[in-house]
Length: 320
Image 1: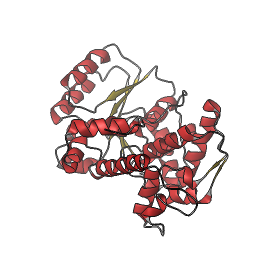
Image 2 (image 1 turned 180 degrees about the horizontal axis):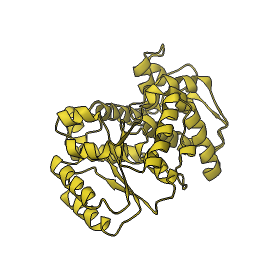
Image 3 (image 1 turned 30 degrees about the vertical axis):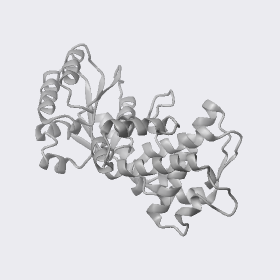
Image 4 (image 1 turned 45 degrees about the vertical axis):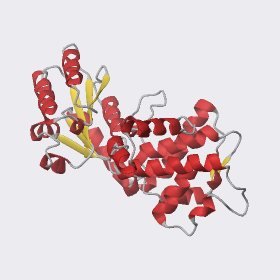
């Protein structure tokens, strides 16, 4: 689950450019404009924003905006404080020149490894590489909490681009959904041509704590169940999402409406319990910002047990 939260958005088997990134809102138009300027100056770039906002997409888009172009786009996933990760990066960097290096979530490295990373970058300053980094929280708060090296922050802060959360740019939600189904149509033959108004209302009323990544995962789940349907209807939405929407906006529907309604039979008990467990575990993960250890402690179970149940739910089977 921790890997899922931070994993990149899908690439759709094509290069990500600024023209392919959804930007109906003025906030995202401003992000794209700053990204063009960042590509022009070719100096270190810092991308800030919550998990799932698409910082990796902006990094790749900047890479493809460069003129003359760099040879490769390479990601360093800084999601652990494993010393061997930085050691391996140091060795590989010796043979890399004229590349774009994206150091994703440098704030997840220990301070010692952040300092070592800075030393490595300074030692390779003549390699003509463009270095881009991302962090998940406000840099000033991270520095105050000693979770981000001030020196490493200064290295990347020549150009800073903040990617706003999805709840602050709801104008981008429907264009993203339409683009998703268009791409899905081209790849898998999706039949969805229209979205019901109550589905649109649900998508726009939800606050999307997981941002674009959460929306994409929801669309993946919906698409996996589509056969010949041409209209995306409310009853096609997963139960856990219906409950989350209800919980967020305190709609007029009651919780039992998702279990019993006038036009539907009762869910089989096994199916309902599976959906209820998936919803509850997800709420625990959301409450603890995706931290498996903290969520497991709050639920009174071992980390291994929680990981097992999350894995089983993801694979579509019921934990025993």
